Structures are given as structure tokens and as C-alpha cells.
Image 1 (cartoon, helix red, strand yellow):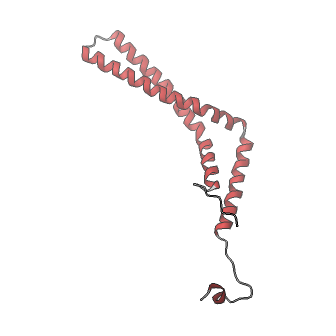
Image 2: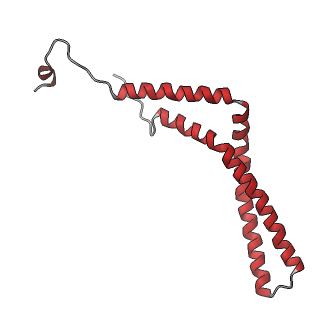
Length: 133
């Protein structure tokens, strides 16, 4: 008798995770896109602060550290934008496929539930005879 395939997650959980990723991608893309722009404006503020204000050595160093952190933060947001953009574009162009995968998820969950609730009721033997009681 063949063994049941061992998986870390149920198939329905994997499909559900994918659908959640796709549902969230547009909002996450927009958030990160806005943050890239905000970090660019912050960087501009900080470089103008260096240029136009008469800063002490310590204030200058602190502002330079802020610029460095701003650039690091901007990179994180920009990387997210680059990774999420293909997902966002796929969602925009393939709504019917997304709906089809949602339907697929329902069918897989229904089959999984059916297999988990499987039972047997003896037809000839009494239940006590069948269960060995």
C-alpha cells in the first residue's frame, strides 16, 4: 500500500499563502513606493541642512549618520518595490486567473476535509464486533 505523501503544510495552506501574498502585494507595493519617495525627500532635507545651516562638528556628524540611515531605509523600501512590482502587475493583468485559483482552493479544502472526516460504519457486523469490544 503506498504511503501518503509527507508535506510540511497542507496543499490548501500553500495555495492560501499564495493567495494572501497576491492580495497583499498591491497595498504593500504602494506603501513601500510611498516610503521610497518619503526617504528621498528626507535625504534632500538632510543634505540641505548640511549645506545651509551652520552646524557644529557633532551636529554635522549626527546629520551625516541620519543621511546614512535614510539611504539604508530607502534601499530596503526600494528592494521591496522591485520585488512586489511583478506580483502587482500580474494581479492587475490576471484577475480571472486569481479567481480561478480561489475556486481551486475551495475544491482542495473540500477534498482535505472529506479525507479528514472519513469513517466507516460496518454493514453486517455490529459496531462492537467490528471495533473489537
